[in-house]
Amino acid sequence: MNRFSRKIADSLRGLPAVTVALTVVLAGCSTAGKPTVVRGVIGSEKQDFFRDPQVVKAFAGHGLKITVDSAGSRQIATSVDLSRYDFAFPSSAPAADKIQRARGTTVKYAPFSSPMVIATFQPIADLLAAVGVAKKGETGWTFDVARYLQLVGKGTRWDQLRGNTVYPVRKDVLVSTTDPRSSNSAAMYLAIASYVANGSAVVQGTAAEDKVLPLVSKLFLDQGYTENTTEGPFDDYLSAGMGKTPLVLAYEAQFVGHAVRGDIRPDMLLMYPSPTVLSKHTLVPLDARGDTVGRLLTSDPELQRLAALHGFRTADTASFAKVTAEKRVRVAPDLIDIADPPSYDTLEHLLDGVAKRYGTPQ
Image (cartoon, rainbow, N blue to C red; front, side, top):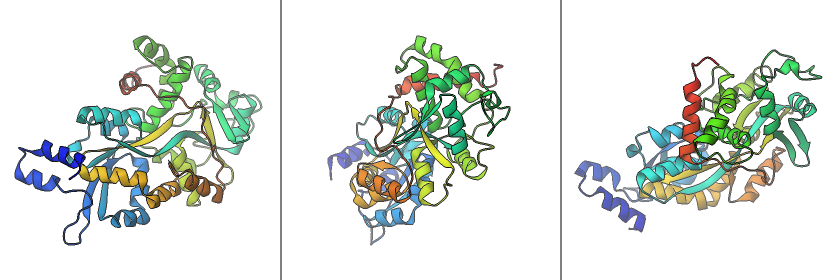
């Protein structure tokens, strides 16, 4: 029994015998040739990965059968009953830190990551380049968040952009996102916007929060209805096209994963917010079985290769480079302009501040 398993077993002393029998099963062990079932709660953007038959087969090779439920990272950290699971796998480091503090553990794994990107179309990118928001460089397109926030602050509409003949609609220039009250991707967008609105500094303290809230709230409230998961707006991007979602916030992994499956058309492209944030998909093991899953995701070559096929960046950088090269997906090979997200508590204060403005006349 390893140290983690011993710690879990010690914590279970005194619990009813049925609970102990259900919980104290050492990871990687199986009974009569049957795989050990390991339950996890994950961010929704990782569902396709865990459902992939090749991923299922890779875990089966280690004697494990993984079953997962999905929830927003904020929900995983605050309202999901984690006693039902062997591991929690939110999409952000701040949410994982919150879980660690609540569970009193320092153990965590960050097997893969994905920067936040803006998925758009070539005509929209060219239009935004003409007004200084977008820029095409040697490694692809960037999206100037500071310049964009200036447009949002003035309530600029698409039909007010000079020389706009490709998308002359009477709608505000806004990036489509998910609901910040439930979704991690929207929280990461808030982290980017608050950093820029705070003079390119991580927001800390009540004064800084109050300073940035009016502007960053507009990014969400002026959109109207927003989806709860990143699949919603990205599916609109894929199916409805430029008319409905000219700009959509996404994980880089979503774009690359769909490119692998042949869903990305030639006129679709990525822009990297300047700055962006790196969404670190962080697994917090809740018992020994969950610990085994974290170790396998981090170190098993086959699982790392499969993660790259789903668009995630891993420690195996060669796999990700191979996937994007083969599918001719233009991604930034090296991410330099990355902002740190605020602490979990500060991010929660900002999210609560935005939430309170829903339903309030602007």
